Amino acid sequence: MTTSALQVAKEALESLDVDKILSAYAENFLFEDCAAGEAIQNRSALRAYFQKLFAFPGVRFSDIRVFDGDDFAALEWTWSGVKRITGEPFHVRGASVIELYQGKICRETIYYDPRPALA
Image (cartoon, rainbow, N blue to C red; front, side, top):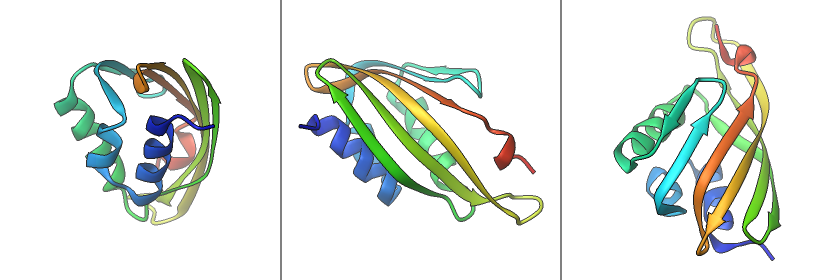
């Protein structure tokens, strides 16, 4: 059975809903984007991160698979959109490793190769 926060995160990615995705995170959390070298620990910075990501031209998240293991989980996903400079479409496969605390995401580390999205 998929933890509620994971289902919320999946639906938020599919609908590009910043408020909904933020609701999946615990009060105290760590969000790490390894490719970008970012570590975020406050809601305003996480909001800005997802707002920027969801504003990408033609952005879409698909093929989202949730693997729930009580306090730990993993998500596989495909991020696609249009390169800003060239206008060419791109597709990036990635994964999130998640730690849960009291049913909310308290730590998420995302892994992906950003090169296909770069123009």
